[in-house]
Length: 467
Image (cartoon, rainbow, N blue to C red; front, side, top):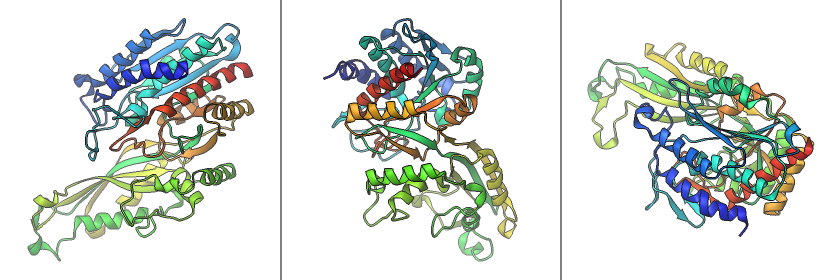
């Protein structure tokens, strides 16, 4: 066992076990987060751990702006001889998604368990491990005497709510962060657990709530059916304005972007490596199939094409409580994933206009945009970074690195990409097949996390050597 792997087992895993026990739900899911104190507990746990395992010269502060979630900010000076290498900024977050139902027997969101080399529980992989891995990578370089640039570690507590607190912290901490030469984001995914994966793009998102009202109160369906239109049927008609119910394809050009040829080529290479696991990793019920047969097209669907999903509903009683009532309203929570380069605010306005225009049967229709976060598209990768990532993958997995877009949204990346246009980016993470972030049975693949930590250390060392 390597010293880095031993450090994970002895120091990081016990801390992550305690972190998973904390229901540190993001503010969107716990509006009383400040009073409940769970985010504060998570921050203090991470801060105390960092102090106990400090890198030489490290400075740590829990930064608090009035009315905002806290940020953990850590600064580590450059090693001797690497003072001119600039700054490496490492990013992660401590807030979590809500509980979600469907956890397997013996597992739960706040009940950590280790099975078959995987640490189960909410937040371990998304994204509690990041702060521990960042410190561990710097400790490894220090122990090996390998030079590294000045490092700044930024850990926020609002990412799962769209990082709406982060711009204020980027402004407040701007002079201390400086202009990073390299950004390492540890909140992304991996196509498999057999090599290092770099993320080339992230989709954007528009979340909102569609409300359709036809009555001021429910009425007997036998009395009103055939006279009063169904609010659910009207909602179906409105959704058809956004996407084709037969194919799932989003209808309007405003929600699309041209896919760069390089990303198409990378999608085909990823499809060759991953094969059917691109869709087989999802828990389809027997007989269910993916929306397309071509693997590369599926990769592009989840990385560069828009898709609509209904993620919640109100006004619908549980089946066991359903009476023969024509319901007065239907409320649907909608999530529209967007290509990386589509402006999310403009897409939200377009979505609102499409849904609210000329409502069927004169129903009262309203669409409220809750979140609009633009995606991110990586700048051209410098030759030194591409080489360093590939060498790190070969060293720790004995397979070359792969590059691919991801279907999720990390608002921080768009913010940082705009703020630091000259930086290089290594966006990576541990969310591989079946890791199931945001869902039941989320897990952290421990062996992959250990190797990823060592790979990040290698890339940080390569950045200092390239200057």
